[in-house]
Image (cartoon, rainbow, N blue to C red; front, top):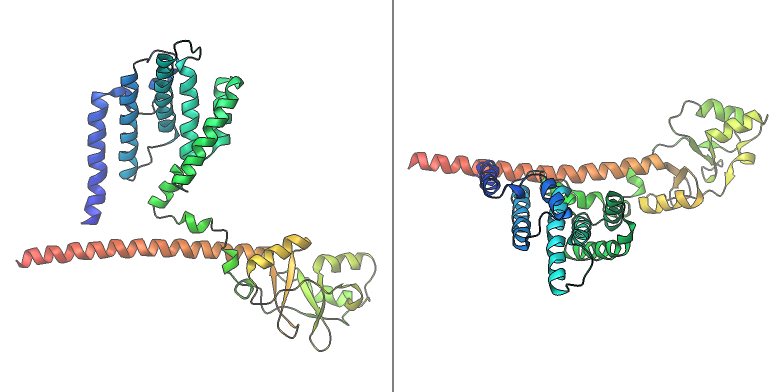
Length: 339
């Protein structure tokens, strides 16, 4: 039954919008004609502006309710033009000596509505300034856009565009969670087993061992397996170029490197990589013996996997809901046949 409703709703929405278009053609489509009429002073009837404003909002609601993508920034500009134009005419009526034309209020209204549904005040302000080449409006534009975006943010954290994505089942909330890395752990992302190099190995021997490895950082350990330093393939190549062929790794490795534990979060790992400007972090156990290695790529890979897992969970939930609806419809049909 639910699947049938999802097919019927767009048809009914299209029928209603067709009737509105037939009755008031100016309220339909991208709204360019209506916007130009307001800006050029050709549309000055407040009642008609209010009617067009209400009908456009109704069309947007129908469009989004029918899971369509027709409601975009053009609709917002149309609504803003009608709202600002109506407000400008009201100001002229209340304050006849006002010298600002209603088109000025329409421009500010367009910027304000766009800033509200996109929650992008700077974009709206710059866009209107560039469109009109009138930078004298920058102060009223700035005030209107900031206030509009703030009110929109208080009422809803979603913009018109993210609301569409959520409507389609995309988990944009989890995709932008600031705590994703905080809830992922080093043991889930680290490369293991790790190739440890003994401290008494020479630079030449280290190059032979590491040149074909898929990762570029290697822990340097003492004879008892305890971590004493770290060296990268780039360091090894540099030392070879300097003629340090027979130099022991204990003499050239970076001593007392920054380390991680398997229980640390990936947020901790990312912070350490950024703070110290390094690309590899050895992971050690409670005895300071290396058990893995974490790189920037490992963190990004774990992050992407978590996002994909969250999206798959949402999609699986939608599929189960749809399947449940189909089974219910099937059972209902079977019951009717039996009756």
